[in-house]
Image 1 (cartoon, rainbow, N blue to C red):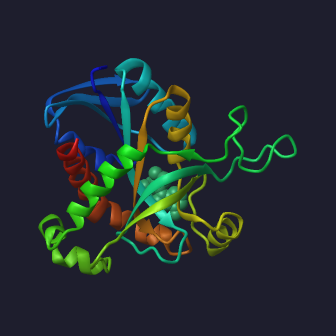
Image 2: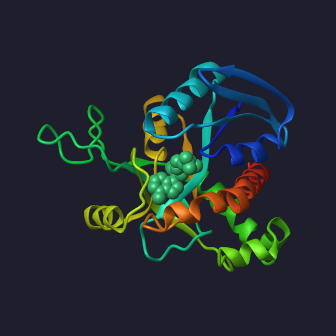
Image 3: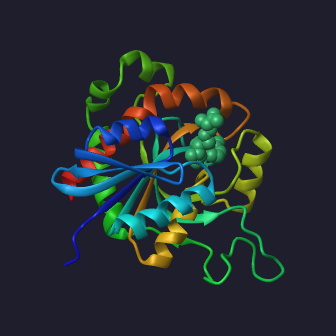
Length: 254
Ligand code: SAH
């Protein structure tokens, strides 16, 4: 069997810091304005990198992971804005299917279809999803959250019993910060749970190179007029710690 090398991409530098802290024998290599941190987590080889923002940046980063670091699988963590009204800040979404909401090559092909792939949705790997689900459920168990975050921060974001959702995630080169953007996406793609800027691009590259992947997103904002306010403090207080905790638990399940 091919030697396992797990790529871990994070969409926030604050998240990356925590995940890099899990690496033993950590070394760093810099290329194309990105720093790639290699080492082992729980004895398994891993490479950790900040994706940078938007579809082009994330696609380039994952391509480098595939060519230069020979990753055999990919985990992506980041934050996202809620589209479904069921979601609250602090909930986690595992992307079962990823869609590029700004892909539109009509009239050549139907809206959202990715040119040359004859596909609209990219599916994440079932085994990886199950592993991530188990790991996140452990993070959510009992009073575990209170050992990761202060009571004050959990209260500030009204995080009491965060839930795990699995379903569609939409990605595009837009930060959603108006009710109009949110309502439009919801009307066009009613099954979409949350919106972000990288997942479906990473999914497309992984699909093309046959790399199993999973996309994990913590809800940081409501993808509405309030989102620029919720966002910075959530990153600082919550998501920086969430990612490392989830990744640590995933590696315990591998
Ligand atoms: N902190 C930066 C902005 C980051 S870009 C700044 O203030 O300049 C936003 C990141 O959060 C991307 O990784 C994107 O995937 C995710 N994200 C979170 N909420 C989002 C929303 N409402 N719309 C789109 N992307 C969102």
